Amino acid sequence: MDKASASDQGTLQTIIDFLPGGITLFNAEQRVVVCNQNFRALLEFPDSLFADGMPSLFDFALFNARRGEYGEGDPETLANQVCERARGMKPHVFERLRPNGTILEIRGEPLPSGGWVTIYTDITDRKRNEETLRRVKDMMTAAINFSPTFIWEIDAQGNYTHLQGVEHILGFAETELLGQRRSATLCGPNGCPGCEVGKLMQARQPIERLVVEAKNKAGATVWLSTSAQPVLDKGGHYAGYRGVDVDVTEITQARQALEQLALHDPLTGLANRRKFSDRFQLERLRQARVGLPLSLMLVDIDHFKQVNDNWGHIVGDVCLKAVADVLVSHLRTLDLVARFGGEEFLVLLSDANAREGALVAEKLRRALENKVIETGLEAQPTLQITASFGVTTLLPSEKLSLQAVIERADGAVYAAKHGGRNQVCSVGSAAPGA
Image (cartoon, helix red, strand yellow):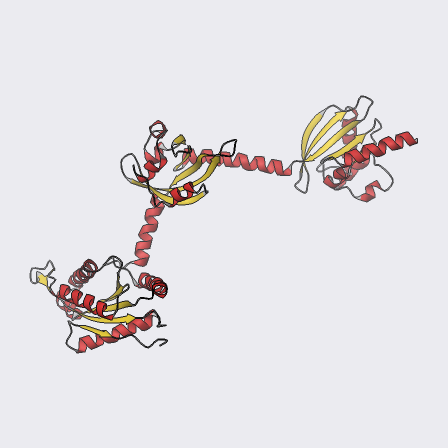
């Protein structure tokens, strides 16, 4: 090779080494004139293959055949087949899945003087993205056609500009909602100012699986799981939202029912011990912030065993529900009543000192004493029952567990029982740190 040819080849090597894909240039004798490092890296050819200079096409093909690039068969036969096909070289583009999972796009172009140039491009990520996109499109189509799902778009003013699949969820034809405000569909004519979805939209933030309440065309409640992303125009300005709603009414109602069972007494509908304990912990945290006392009341129905023994457990259950109704109806909505077990009830009074707790307990005692309970029995159509009330107050400085506070109130109930029943007894708070 003369100096000019060597200089030209060096220049060509420098150029193709900067190209992003793999490049090979074969002459008419099927020998490599030049190739770049990207080609060697993509095909994982070892340096030993280039130890005696540039390999021939047969060398490459034999190496590939031996490591399984062309499938099963005699390696030399497979390599000769590759060389034979190359002799009738025509422009071509094909994809090859390598044993390591890499997908290469291979483009070959014959040269006027004989030989050919081949470009190798790693399209693994592109193919995976295309497959993912295809799967997503298929899934979206299936979701819209076969599941309780609809997709939507709104403009910058919050009006629907596109809907698909909404009729089988909300009963509205798409034409009935196009141009209408989405917030009115979900929350009514005045929207829902406190809605988390609305807050996120105002902040132009993504929405991920937030459950919202909507009304269908018949006026029934439908629960939707909403996911959406803000949409920008070509200038980067806010243009609206694009999202998907999934009907989760059944699962929401089932979850609500399970929560009701998990946190409430099935007979009276009051909170159970678990819910009362959770609320007590929250109240203690709140108490630490505001620095106000709270009071706890234990209510024990007097002579309840006699009710069950004399009139049966059905009448006993009627009495328990009547007590629950009296307690709830005479307390603030922020107070919590729980059935502690058997004929005992717990009441948590937020921000109530000892005097206030005792006054509330006395009000409840009188209301229960005057309650006429209808039993449904001919022999005993009505009953009146009383209860003993134990009240204790917890200061912010006290470090007591719920169990310790209940035990303190139970001591007050014990005193009320031994004092003649149907009365209120209070115990003072313990010393700080007790």
